Image (tube, rainbow, N blue to C red; front, side):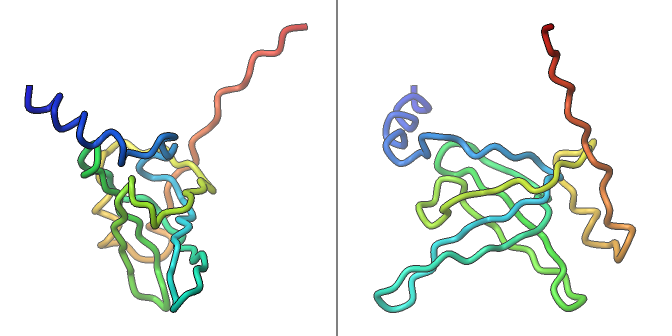
Length: 123
């Protein structure tokens, strides 16, 4: 009963079109930034190393390397500050959380590309 009431209360705030990406994907997160009275879009690109929660509490963490230092940023999925999430590359992973990438450097952080299923063409 409680979950139904929470879902009903959260429904107006949940994103209408869900973001389509998975753990291991390399994504560009387009974030709205307010500077004074102007608004601009800033892009944070990196590898999705985890997703957690559901509904309004759903979050995802993106990791990238900047000047040889690892930077992670956690975004709420349903935030109005997120304009878009563009998937650049899809990777094949066998875990739900890729925290082991934190301990790796250079080429050891590479993930294998996920192959797309070939669309059947009717002749």
